[in-house]
Length: 148
Image 1 (cartoon, rainbow, N blue to C red):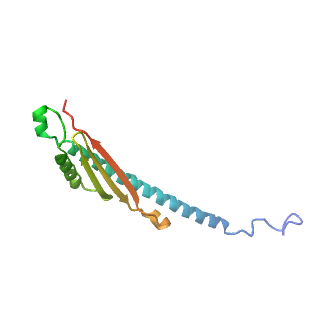
Image 2 (image 1 turned 45 degrees about the vertical axis):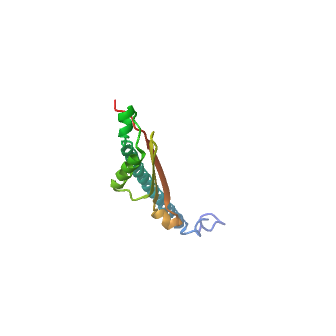
Image 3 (image 1 turned 180 degrees about the vertical axis):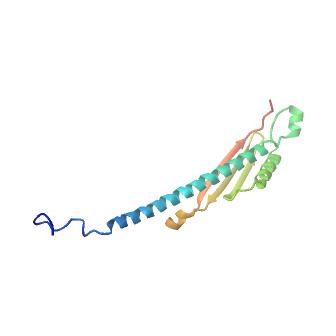
């Protein structure tokens, strides 16, 4: 019996288990946020790896100097075919580019541009939201120049 006349019991006595439901909902939200952060971290890592690879390929392509033009005029310009071949060979020799899906290499006498596209497969976010792979695109441009 209650100590105060007219009061029967606590007003929350009929809500047993509500804390357990709140905690279950909180756990599901934490799983979702954890999965999202894990997938975003993987995407940042893959993008950084592609950016480093594309930078290295552009620098390698910028070493494809047109030797005949240099000997004739002293101008440091690219041989576009040689520069593209060097950049493509450099990119093909690199390992650990799991996200890479496509590469475009274009060279002019003044500069070379290497563009790469990729996709990161999501793990936990895909299970919760049925999400598509996250697209990645990076580009790098390099110009030939004379050594000091």
